Image (cartoon, rainbow, N blue to C red; front, side, top):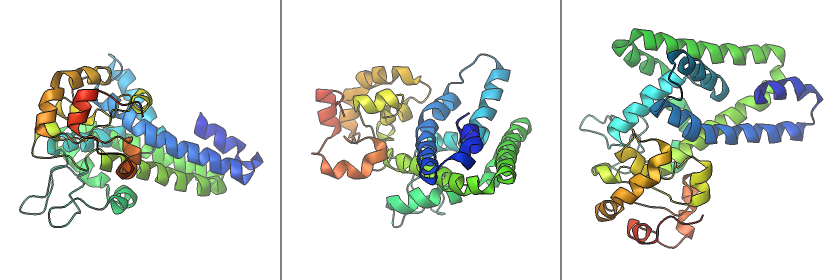
Length: 276
C-alpha cells in the first residue's frame, strides 16, 4: 500500500516529500530483509502451504526480489558461513565478505555494500534451484516476473516516479549489504560458535527481531528468533572461550564501532546485553 499510495499521490507531492518517502522505503528494505523476510525463510509463518506461497510472492513484490531465490542464496550462506576462498578461489557462501577480498582478507566494506546488488546472479541461482526442485524454480521465476511486471507497469503509469523510486530501491538493498558485512566482519569462519558477529543492544534487537544475536543464529539457525536470548544464555561461556566477536553498535552502524570502548565476548558474557 505504501508504494501504491506513493505512486498515486506522486503527481501532487512536492519533490522533497517524494525524497522523504523514498528514504523511508530504503529504510523499510533495510529493516524487512533482516527481519520479516529473513525469519520467514527460516520459519515459515503459516501452516498452510498456499498461504506461505502467497506471502512469499507478496514479499517479493514489496522488496523487489524473489523470496525463493533469496532463500536459496541465504541457505548457501549458512552452509558456507562467510567462508574464505578455497584453492580454486571459490566460496560456498556467495555472500561471503571474503569472496572478493585479497590475500585471505575480507573485502573493504564499501565495495561490498555498493556492488553487492550487481553481483547477485539470479540466473545461476535459478539453475541451482532447478537442478534440485524444478517446481520451486518455476515459483522463483514467477516471483521475478511478478515484480518486474509491477515495476514495468509503474514505469508506464509514471516514469518520473520511477526516477525517484529506483535509486531508493538500490540504496535500500545496499544498506542491507552493509548489515550483512558487519554481521560477519571479525567472525571466525573456522569456528562454529564464532561464525557470526553479535550485537546485544536492547533497542536494536527489539526492533530488528533479535537480529543482533547473529553468532547464536548461525550456530543454531533453526531456532525461532524469539528464542535467541535463550540460546545466548545457554552458550555464552562457550562463546566466550571460542572468542565470539561482539560489537556495541548495531550492525547497520558497524563502521562506527571504533568509537566505542573495546567490547569483547568476555564482557558480554559477564555483563549481558547493553542498552544501545
